Image (cartoon, rainbow over all chains, first blue to last red; front, side):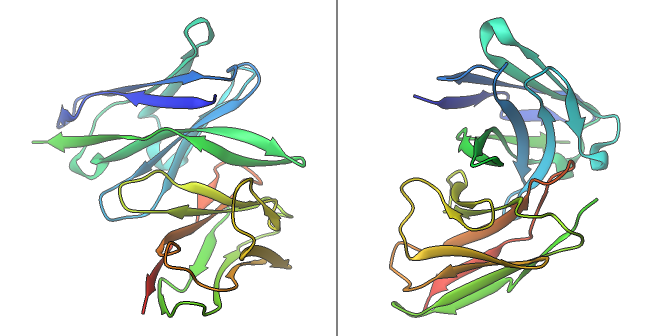
Length: 120
Length: 107
């Protein structure tokens, strides 16, 4: 069955770099797109970026050049790296699969998320 | 970037009541609109895709509609398991954007 699982640190120091891995199973990264979404405590969902099935990427400009998304298809893993972390980057980070239904794309499967706290 | 304006921010309704949540897109996104339900501590769950199509396993009391650039999620008869936060998401073009969310509570 389709599964996504995020792994990463619970705590990151201010100005340091965050690295999170999304390990997927039940589908191929060369067939489906995978997105990153984050949610600060008590707040809404924010789209961060995407790894397209062809290997390209797209990013939310709000993260400027801080964010990088990559993948290792042989390991079925998608990676998020974000540098220069600030306290307002404290959030739960989710990866989600983009499935297509009747030609329309939706995030149909999500990981459970990893809660990251940025500490000073 | 496409903006999604979601309303209301919060809503309290009684069991069996009809509930409607709306999202207004800042430009034409066709039917590239999905609705999600999120419960505390959980990941969002897909309810509606393509603006009007019900995702697998979602009760038929949920429905989606579109009028121009305004999209609505309707719960026809509110049930005890329906409270949570509801989000719309436009998938028409990157950067994808979520609505701010609607917190639905039982009265």
